Image (cartoon, rainbow, N blue to C red; front, side, top):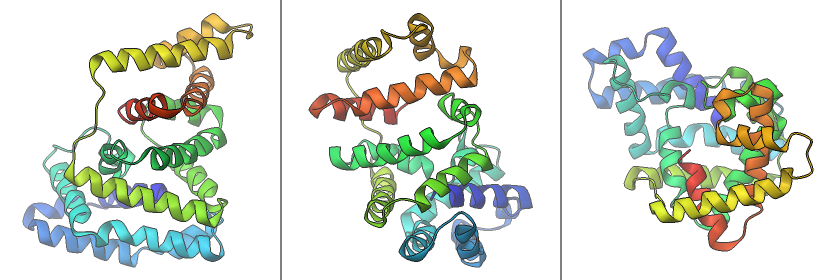
Amino acid sequence: MKFLSFLICLCLLATGTVADTAKTNRADVIRLLQKFVAETPVRADLEAQGFRGENLELAVRQSQVFVQDPGIAGYMADLLIAANAGQAPQGAASGGLAQGLVDRGISHLSLREMRHYYLVEQSVMNALPPRECGRAIKGRPQTQRQYDIASQVEAQMNTAALREYYRIQLKAARLGLRHRANKLSPAREVEIVEKIYADLAVRVADSNDARGLIAAFQNVNRVSNHRACTAGRLFIETVLSLKGNDLRDALILMSTL
């Protein structure tokens, strides 16, 4: 889950564990990573975030499955080795060690699975304070506060919905190992963007600041965090209101942003 990915990456990078990887091979790094996760007091951390009962057991299990998967664990190890060599992909530390795989695999999910994934992401976005929400929309490095809130949202989810979200997360990561992210054709991307902005224009038409909101949609990095948050929430809401192939392609497009 998100907060755990953050914890793993933060602790490994901050404590110097990665610095030792120059003297070890990939298999050693995988073992170190698995040992670190196994010894992390996950249950207590999850309980502090509000997880109880079956949701707690699901989250504890989810905290282990990524490092237990040979392919995903190898991907994580490669990131740590690259970080030690100063070659880690931008955003790898703040996004979590496996998040790149999840992002790559989302576009290969079924429409139902993609929608479920982004409905949870929407719930997290709506729960964030405007400043943290705006930072997330702008793609700024993620904070512990953001991870805490994401975890608290997950803790309160219906158990069946949480189980499905975790299944989708793992499936996306495994798909990301085998596939590059799906991309729309340039013509279809233009078509979908125009569709989204047309629907956004309708949604903000009655606002006293319609022009400002449209400008914020077009360049969130030039507006305040509060304005970026408002624009981002409306954007996600608009995308999730689409149907059929428009929804599928809009979610594929969103997975690449």
